[in-house]
Image (cartoon, rainbow, N blue to C red; front, side):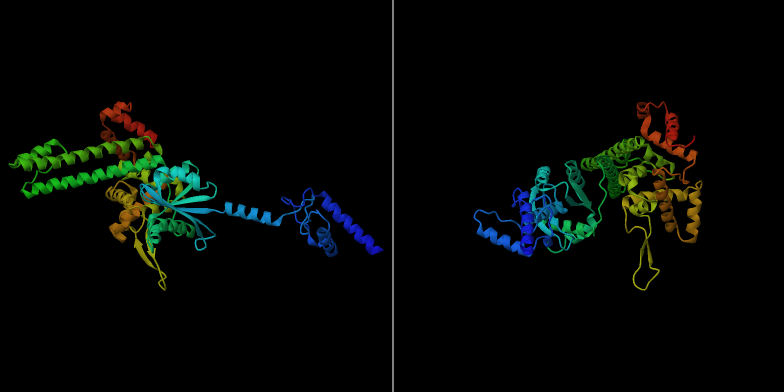
Length: 474
C-alpha cells in the first residue's frame, strides 16, 4: 500500500511538470534538470504510456526547465557552434596589384592549424569597397597587406568603410611569400599565414598629410640627383672637346651657357646638344627650388617640427626629412627606439661559445636616407668648435677613430631630436648667435617677395619672430 501511494505521488509530481509546459517540443532557453530527479521506474512507465495512449505527445525525459519548458539540446548546441564560428577571428590575406588583387580568408587557432575558407582571384581594385562589403565582416576580419606600391592608400580605403587593415614589412614577408608556388592566390594565403605566425612586423601607416610630405621630400631629393647628373653630363661633354670652364662658372645660370659657347667654335648640331643639356639642368634646378620652398613652408606651418632648428647641423632638408619619415613621434616610446629606426644604434652579433660577440656598427638596419642626413649633421658638429658636443666628439675620436665618433655624435643628435619633439629639455641647443645665422639663411631663401606676403618687413623681423616661436631668447 505504501508503494502504491509513493508511485501515485511521483506520478502526480511528473504530471504537474508536464502540465506546466506549453509545448514539450520547444526547449529554447530552458535550463537542464538533473537526471537523478527523475526515477528510472517512472521513466519506464512514461515510455510505455506514450506508446499505448493514442495521440499522446512524447515527453522529453532528459531535461526539464525550471519554468516548465523542455530543453532541445541539439538545437542549442548547433546555435552555440554557429555563434562561436561567427565570432572567431579571420585573417584576410590580400595580394594587391595596381589593377587587380587576390584574397584568401584563413581561420584557425594558429598559423599551422588555420585553413583557407575561400580564395578570390583577379578582383578589380576599382570595386574594392563593394567586394569588402559583400565578403568581409568588420567585427571579425583583419585584412593583411604587404608594404609596397599602393598599400597605404588601399589600407586607408578599407579603414574608411570600417575594415581593419594592417601592413606587413615587405623585407620579411616577401621571403616567405616567394617560396614554393608563387602565384597570386598562394601569395594571399601565405601573407595571412605569416601574419598569424607573427614572423613579419606590422609597419606604421602614415596619414594623408604625412604621405604628402614624403612625396614632397622624395621629389626634392630626385631633383637634387637630377641636378648633379646633368651637371656631370655637361662637364663630360665639354671635356670631350678639351673645354675647361673657369672656376666659379655657374652652370645653373644663363651666363654658364654663354661662357661654354664662347670657349670654342661649335657646329650647329653640337651647339643644339649642348643647349639641350643646359635646358635639362635648368629644369631640374627649377624643380629643386620649387619643392625646397614647399618644404620650408611646411616647416614654418608646424612649430613642433620647426624647433629642430635649435640643434646644430639640422637645417631645412634634415628637419623636413625627420617630419616626413618619422611622422608621429609618439610611436617611439624611447629615444632608443628612434635611434634604431633611423639606424644609428650599433648592432651586435653573438653565437655559440663567443659570449662577447662581435660589434657590427651601424648601417645594417634602419632608414639609410634619413641616416645619411643625420650623419651629415654630425659631421657639421665635428667641424664647429663653438659647440660642446664638438669637444666630446673629438675626445672620442682621439681614443678610437673619427668615423666612430661621428656615428656616436649622430646618435646623440637623435636622442636630442626625440627629447625636443616630446617636449623635454635638451642640452644640445645652438647658441643664439648661431641660430640667428641659420634663420638669416632661411630668410634669404624665402626672398623679399615671400617675406612681404608673410607680413614681414625685412629679414630681421622674420628672424626675431622665429626666435620667439621656437622658444630661444634673442
